[in-house]
Amino acid sequence: DSGVTQTPKHLITATGQRVTLRCSPRSGDLSVYWYQQSLDQGLQFLIQYYNGEERAKGNILERFSAQQFPDLHSELNLSSLELGDSALYFCASSGGQGGNTIYFGEGSWLTVV
Amino acid sequence: GQNIDQPTEMTATEGAIVQINCTYQTSGFNGLFWYQQHAGEAPTFLSYNVLDGLEEKGRFSSFLSRSKGYSYLLLKELQMKDSASYLCAVRDFQRGSTLGRLYFGRGTQLTVWP
Image (cartoon, rainbow over all chains, first blue to last red; front, side, top):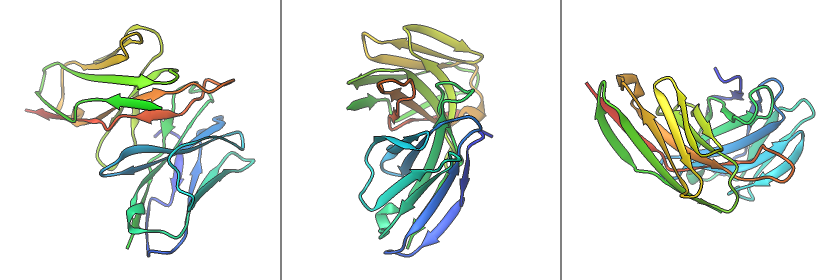
């Protein structure tokens, strides 16, 4: 158990819909990262937050957005969903007692039908 | 940007030693990580190198040469449970912070045969 908690674990939704994925980082970690993993793409960096502020952006679509709240949990919002958005979405955190190591949550499986 | 290359697949037998290579090109280097990932599960941290040389941790060792943009992960005394994907990841430099983002290679799928 990495200490990073993600919900929901599985989600099935229809095209055009909107979903929110939630992440609680490891206790003491200030930095949260979101990654997308699909079969043909590998792990793709989406976005990073540090202590509530956006720090870095990767290959995140405009239909996707994220935020980190004062209690340091984070949410990834995916809207106008397309079939190609079906993937495993990972949250990761770092910066606390684990130091520089980035620890991953179990992921949220999103299936768009 | 980042460009990370590693072999797609490797096979080995139980008890053997396997070396998984990773080469990278990066605009700002702030550490190299190796993760293990079983299908459908979270990547789990194996090792971290930021200086040149070998880091040993039990059956796993990782080597880094920054001048060559090269790393390898060495797995000894292979076990069936070591069958997994091994991900090489490079962290970039973030001004004022050691907490840069990780860029991942596509992973090397290792199959260990009895």
